[in-house]
Amino acid sequence: MERVRELAVRLVRECGDDAVVGLSPAEIVEVATALGVYELPSSYVVFLGLMGKRAGQVLAGMDMFYPRLLKVKEYAQELFEEAGKVDLLSDGAIVFALHQGYRAYWFADNSEDPQVFSFKRVMSRRVDTGTRLPPSCSLRPKFGEAGC
Image (cartoon, rainbow, N blue to C red; front, side, top):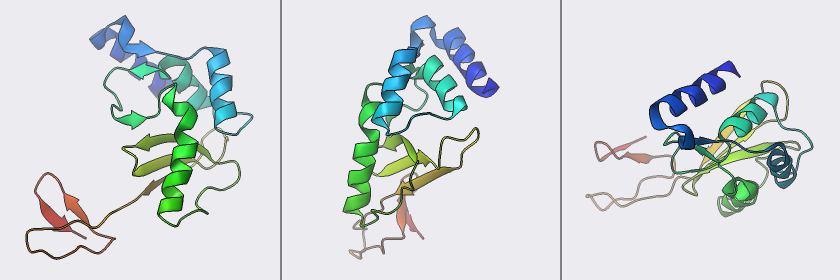
């Protein structure tokens, strides 16, 4: 939890007071309700209270800030259904982020230090040779080479 607080202080110092905006206690309860749980991990509650609406450019491009956070579980379930992986979330799992609609992140449960899981949908892409990559491959955007 201390690392989360240190990050928030650093962002305010480097980016200004309005760069970091947290959630109110009522908004945190709203998030828990939207995510389908009674209680959130305490370290995540600290994060939400300090940076639940905005954290400068940290994690830009992620759907993990309020109010979009209220829909991430729904979006993740759609992602899992499209990939044929409807059984990925266990009971009590807490989806806390979605990246660009193809990667989901969730806590296993609401324990003090829960395991974090991630799922990434990988799509086939055409490469210069005209061949298709198997689903387990991805393109390295920095170098433009296929890698498995």
